[in-house]
Length: 202
Image (tube, rainbow, N blue to C red):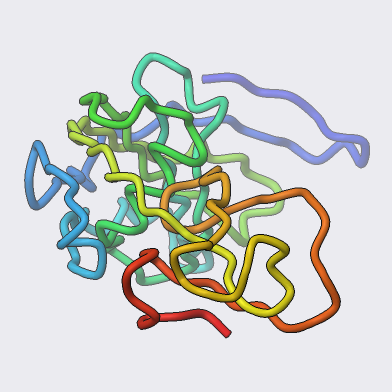
């Protein structure tokens, strides 16, 4: 028990941290990402309400997830407010976190640390340590097969047919492509194959 005085000489007590009563759990201890499950909810975390700290106080919840052994320094954070006891992730959510945010190598499996923090509010003269509950899960990432994208049309200096399409540089699989060069005055669009005009991006 620590006792101190604030600037207004009010008594401030710091009680010890309470035991974990939230007991956060994951719907699975390991998930595998694929191109086909991007829109599916693959992982859900649930926890109990934190321990009450008095009639005038209330709890808000902070959810964190990060690469294991990183001390949550690059964590994804979600301020969940009151009475929220669940957090879900789709395959796309987990892909963006692992591959795009934390730069995990596609195809690798990674362990993640998860934490939920119950913060005590409306206790101006009595600091109360937050309640914390943690767990771990594993995520298997995947490699995205490369997908070509070609520039065709009257602006293409090589010719207007699909077989003369200019291959673009695929920076992020299926998302970001670049190309630099000279085009003619005219129109252009993008196709996936030199043998098919559809589908196209116009």
